[in-house]
Image 1: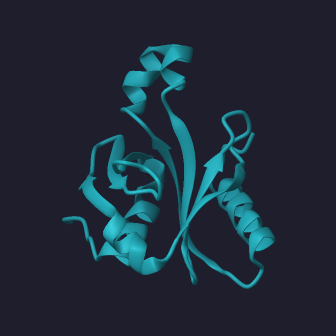
Image 2: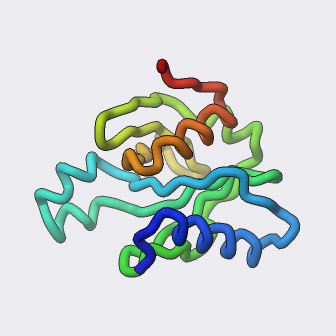
Amino acid sequence: MAMRKATVQEQINAAIAQANPSDRPRVSIQAIAGPNPVLMSFLSIIGQAFLTYYFVTVTDQAVLVHKASRLNNRPQGIVHALQPAEAMSAVSNIRRGGLWSSFRLQLPGQPKPTKMNVHRIWRPEMDQLLEMLTGYRPAA
């Protein structure tokens, strides 16, 4: 199971290279879609059923959303590929928290934006990703 951030990033980069060798990842984050992960962890296995794990990556050509395996934390496959202009307008409601930050991402085919929760170990990458997409810069 990939637990180290560097190992996870290598796996994401390898998955992108396999899908499109000419595309180059610029920044990736791991996000958990659904209600607050802390609240869901109190509900144990039942709470985990309400969460979906993703990797969101900005590449030279697109914004890719990979589904992540719950068992080994590896990217399983691209579930959405957004054009950069489309992704810019798909991000909303950015919130920074002490342990978990979040933003909403309007995924194709979904009636409302999906809440993406991002753990603080991914915060520098989240800030970089959001700045690339929206121009958002957190207050220092």
